[in-house]
Amino acid sequence: MGKSLLTIDQLSNFDISLLTSMNYLDVVLNQDITACLMFFQPSTRTRISFEIACINEDIPYIIFDQNTSSIQKGENIFDTINTLYSMGIKIFIIRSSDNIIFDLYRHFKDIDDIHFINAGSGTEHHPTQALLDYATMKKYEPEVITIVGDIYNSRVAKSNITLLSKLDKQIRLLPYNPELVKDLESDNVTIFDNYRDALLYTDIVMCLRPQVGEVDSHKLYITNFLVRKFCPDAKIMHPGPVKYKTISKELAFSKNSLISDQVSNGVSIRRCLLKWVLE
Image (tube, rainbow, N blue to C red; front, side, top):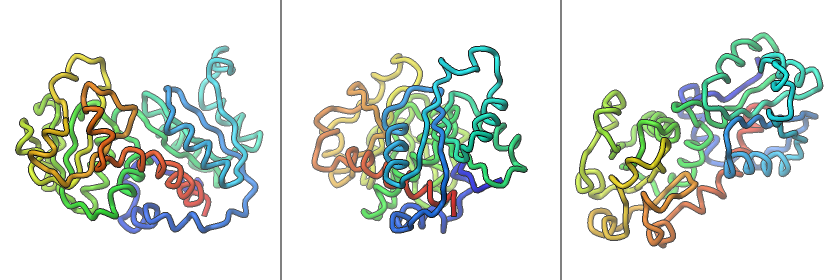
């Protein structure tokens, strides 16, 4: 199996440092290779940033559309991947609501030149988002990061928790329902049930959108007032798309907001990642 990225767990601290330092942007690819973007869930930022990354690195790519594919005729995903590989596609960038990418990785593990990149799977893993988030915040040298919102259903939150824990950062969680995320608590992770304790003197406030419906979105609403009161120097992050029911528009566009930087870094991180899997 060629090098792949399925989870943050598989990365060493050295890998994280190397990828988020953007050093791979200076590496020139000398491989004739084609990529396939297989997105079984809607996406703007992740999909288009991977497209731009491929264009910038002169990697031809195709966008797989399951609605016009032989999957509609009953073909399984394993046969589909095998067919595309036989056509010369070697990198498969996959987003899905389940964890099929792990089954695909195991199924094709004996092929030396096939690569899988997880662009979001299930409710547990979004490694490229965590990498770009850390690349965005690292120059500010944060030690305390507060994650607010629908943490239980968020693969962004869980991948960030894994990455930041590896780096021995202190992570505060302010979830809709603390009972649902108790298993995330650790030496590095503390769960709170109020704004003051979660936000006080934190370095980063990472807001999340509700993943399943809107029923709980009113419970946590991060505003400029709260940030000025408890953590006036904190940088504000959000993986997008931003829903202004969980973060105020004023805060999202404030001088401390890093949201646009996250989007920009999404392209750079994915360019680096394409080169990392091919080295």
